[in-house]
Length: 283
Image 1: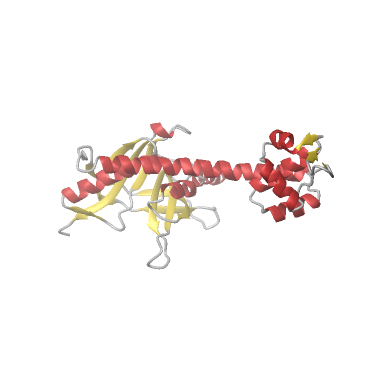
Image 2: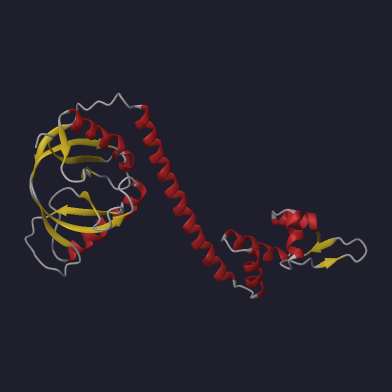
């Protein structure tokens, strides 16, 4: 048997914590010396300790852990719970990393205020196009992480549905955004993933929309090179050019995104054309 100090070291917990577990009846010592009061534990009790720590890491209270330990939770069930928690934590780490990228981009944008070169913005027209489209929602247009999560799964799903109906992409994928038809104070937006198509097919049972996007007479455009998580600076470059040249956006001003080059997984080498439909302020 092990002293409480040795057992604490082997189990990677504190002596104070083991004493607390004893007090609440969670892990009792295997033996207590009747004269000295010293607590002693066995190696077999490390299995119980491992379960206690694992369940605590899953977010359960000590009282809940005690009830589950007394119910003799099976190893396979515990492993499943831990795998699920691991997946949740990994997703949280990924989301936090994405938000850190977003914060860094906003910081760089602030540092370059007043020094924005708009020389690569051009004004052109955009032709009408027929597109296959899937739609989702995101909480806000300025929440890049939520937009990416809402938008990214739509493209493979859309391609699969198109393939099932013999409809093929005829150009670069694109994304565009519209305010969701909810209350006036709601910032929720509709995010649209689309592919240009040559098909004239019609039908409501395709699993996706086939619509015609109208031609746009005047569009301010600029290329964004790199991860779309860092596109805020390029969008503000567009905004600066629009304001400096006597234009205003048509509609809510959300930029349409044409993914000119989008190597899978290599987001830092993406090339995206950002488009904002404009009209003159005198109109």
